[in-house]
Image 1 (spheres, rainbow, N blue to C red):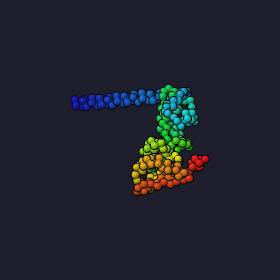
Image 2 (cartoon, helix red, strand yellow; image 1 turned 120 degrees about the vertical axis):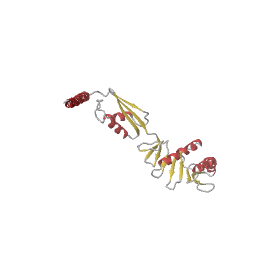
Image 3 (spheres, rainbow, N blue to C red; image 1 turned 90 degrees about the vertical axis):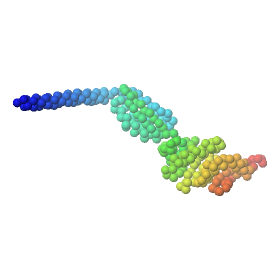
Image 4 (cartoon, one colour; image 1 turned 30 degrees about the vertical axis):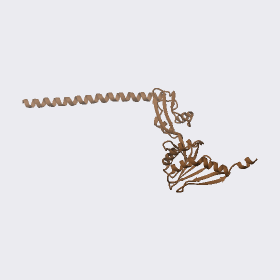
Length: 261
């Protein structure tokens, strides 16, 4: 009899615990549903009552992208005056398609501001006449002409190698007051440079830096010889075991004739 009573009490306690858990879970779900429902109501109310987008802040140094163009692209997506309906992912993807834009960050700032952080590509050189390269060797394409940057040419996937070569030799030429117009890298790993005055330097496959230094050292002498024979330099070919060859073109101005007159 005593054993039966104990078992019955244990069952009652067990069911009581289960009942309490069910009541607790039910209350929790009710409170959670109430919170979610209220959040949905608030969001719907904000959308319907058009919380205004009052300010768009564009952050970043822009040299090639017009801020008005950026704003027009955002406005073209719709929801012009509604802060809540601004979709940062859609805005990000839209602005990333602009030609000069390298990086985009879009963030909402409560209650009415949209912050847009932009980083532009900074062109260092042209690549194969169709593209541009930035300092990291990233390829991008824009319809824009910049006279102050050189043209780089090379096989597919060699852009970073050619760019690094250009960056390594350009200080040497700048120090000698020579301006580089073009760098060409062939499939046979041969280098050729074109200076601003259209002098072609054929450096070959090996010791190109040493050969360039040799040209810089000999350049004043070659120029003097060109004036003496009334010619201009067409090319300087360093593909010899010792020395180099100079190719000549007729001078654009007949200095001897001017001197005689």
